[in-house]
Length: 459
Image (cartoon, helix red, strand yellow):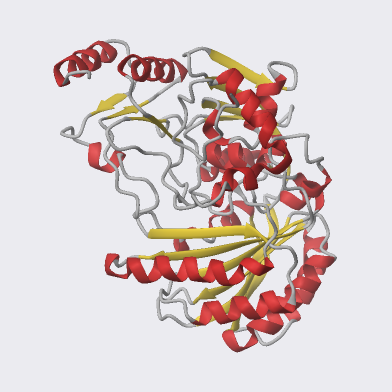
């Protein structure tokens, strides 16, 4: 076992060249740096290496290997399962690495691994460009992209990973590799869906597209008694939605904290404003909404519109799966489950997969879920720690009640830390799982990067 004195000596040695901060538990800034977005996760790394560039990441990986420390990788720290941190190991924190550069002529953008979608969009929207990113702007680009990347533009431009051109990755042996269609193409295939299993993604290069800067978007909310009709209407709208229209529906609570239950539809149309007005008009005219706020708005405003509903430090427990179909029985079960929701921040959400995302072959990327349909999220969120048992139980009971309506696929970015029954990783990757395990054996045979939704190396 490595002694505390020898660890301290190794940290001193590391600090000689390390460009960022090295934070130990007694250091100023450690308490804030160790926190991730989900307040339910409370871990204490032995050391936090706040990197400023790729060389810092290499040094941190080398340090961890030398001392046999477990490694967690933090990009935006948004992942609900809390995989970005570790008790007693090393957190490689990319938060200081926020550089974003957009080339409007080439329609590409390069971003470092610590950038968020708010920071990415701020730069690309200067040129009226964007690619699919998180529906919550405080989400980090790294984790979202490596696991898939659902977002407002997926019908028109596919997932975040479908827009990826290259990734610079620090491997388990400390080497830096570029993964692209032309270089290390098998690694490029794997990281487009395989999460943090293959290394530390230091930077990303994306293809960006003309979007906005003004798009058509917003929210319509309905009294809860209209929720059944609203969800059936949502099914009709999405059945014929054009690529440019992304529609998310859910059972939600009023933003005032009153606990008032509502049905809600959030839309983004990334085509022309005339096309957006025509596509969203049926939604604006449906039912008797309590709130109707759909219209022209900046894309960046839409991308941050939901941020307040997911504050940093809130306690979260999520369950998620793709639906076999959005049947009347599934809708009725959703409503029944939501009537029992104990927290005014809880939600049941439906995200529609269609358009460009469904025109990619299952085997073209590691992300296999390319069928038109719906992803269901049981989202339990609360602020009062005394509510934890009730809120976790509601999420689990609701997910169990909705299981008969689910397909076999799971979206890896939404999988909670408690998803241990059976083999949820196999459900996340389906027919691509075996190849991912083979590539894990090639690039990380010792499973050095295992504090993630782990793909075990094939023996």
